[in-house]
Image 1: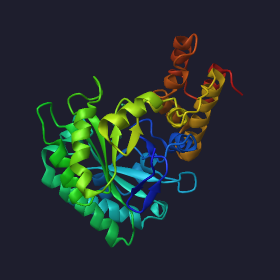
Image 2 (image 1 turned 90 degrees about the horizontal axis):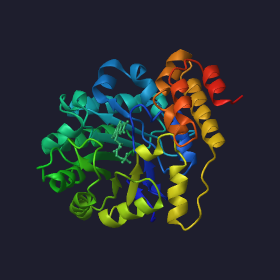
Image 3 (image 1 turned 180 degrees about the vertical axis):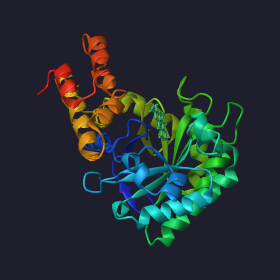
Image 4 (image 1 turned 90 degrees about the vertical axis):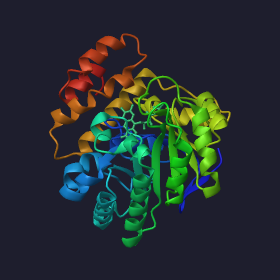
Length: 335
Ligand SMILES: Cc1cc2nc3c(=O)[nH]c(=O)nc-3n(C[C@H](O)[C@H](O)[C@H](O)COP(=O)(O)O)c2cc1C
């Protein structure tokens, strides 16, 4: 793959982890970075909540680590430009975010709780508001004295009849977005069916005059599917979501296969060890959080690491009732 530039940031191998609520813990993002992901954004964090509650309440989901992450990226969601102005100013005034490299705005989330507030994919119905949000974020970054590109992640449409995708992304680019990632599904599709790469291609084409990179997203899981997504959409880079759950090796696989190297599958033992590494990382990154809470939150993630093992069902069941790291170790027969 060719290197791309997002604002002032050089991206050598433009394959990134797609943000995923519940999965994009710092610990996992660091691991994916080691496996070759160019960058790994946080999951969506409410701009309004940062504005009114500060960073404390969001810190588990919004934390970045400029030492362990090459390119720390936070994703914000919201519906009011003023919330972005205030949230970005707060973030950039805080010592923890001095190493932030990219600010991403969620314009694709289909979850009703988010959509009914006018955020996420609802912004696709209001391109003017979406543009004002981009402008507000870009201005707030500049006013804070930073040179941080603002990127957007969106879908192919608000509903299946919506043909406004190309105009929408063009408006975002003209408002100052430095990169746009397009998930090839509409809001009602959620994650069902297949990504519509033709729709992504039309949107990519619409952004071309603005000279910013476009990333395609949806259904990429290996070298072959990565090549198909790139060919069919004409995009400059890719984001990989679900295929990375419990499988950070997917980034190594894609790079190896695209570059004609043979990829070596991790063994069951390596997968179990990686599960434990992610869990221990989550524990260390949240020292104020009760261990039981960390393990319980991780219950949704653990089955993905065990998938494909012989006798996986019983192990998954046991992991899903574990409440301590020792219990997890015992189930996995790890020290
Ligand atoms: C569990 C889960 C949580 C997600 N959370 C977010 C999120 O916080 N922000 C976002 O932009 N997209 C989110 N997404 C969408 C993914 O980033 C991605 O667009 C989608 O999964 C399609 O890519 P894939 O086919 O590679 O999974 C989420 C997806 C899943 C499955």
